[in-house]
Image (cartoon, rainbow, N blue to C red; front, side, top):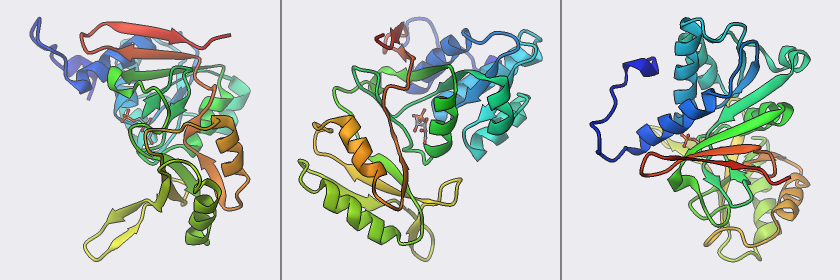
Length: 257
Ligand SMILES: O=C[C@H](O)[C@H](O)[C@H](O)COP(=O)(O)O
């Protein structure tokens, strides 16, 4: 599972998207120092960071490092990689110094869409509680506006979910090309609602050509809807974004002060 097992591509050959994710993840892990408590992100990019951390811990290079996982999947992966784990409550005392996670979209102000893999609530709690939040992406995740390349996920309680979906539609129906639906997964018998780690459902909001409105206003309006728990727009949270470019070079973007 360790990243050391992955063989490098032949010199001069273009890197695959997964290799670019690994490049960004490894660069982010360079920020980790002995003794740090980390927020451990979720997804295919964050998985490379977990593997790299595991390798460094096994080599004895990062004594005292522990992590707070942002999903059940990450908890299992990190445990397999040998990363000591802490629950969020214990970590608050120890201070989460740094979180490392992927994103589905990054806009020019370093606002993010996250949660297309189904994790957003624990990510936002843990990454919001930390001192520094380093986002790792390949170049394809950079967008001019949030919502350009797919859904903005919203976590809702299962009770009355179709009713909550109706309220979301009513609030945003005026926005260009807006539509929303409950996220489902196929089973042999039927399509059933996707269930998050927290036992909730996900509403997916789509905007034609991205969100042209005020993101903070849209966030506030969403969070005022009873039944909505949290959404996947991470506004002003990322402190650093590490981008692996198609040619294998890395750009490091910092939040404007
Ligand atoms: O729900 C998933 C998380 O928010 C992920 O961090 C996000 O979807 C990016 O995932 P990936 O690195 O697999 O593109």
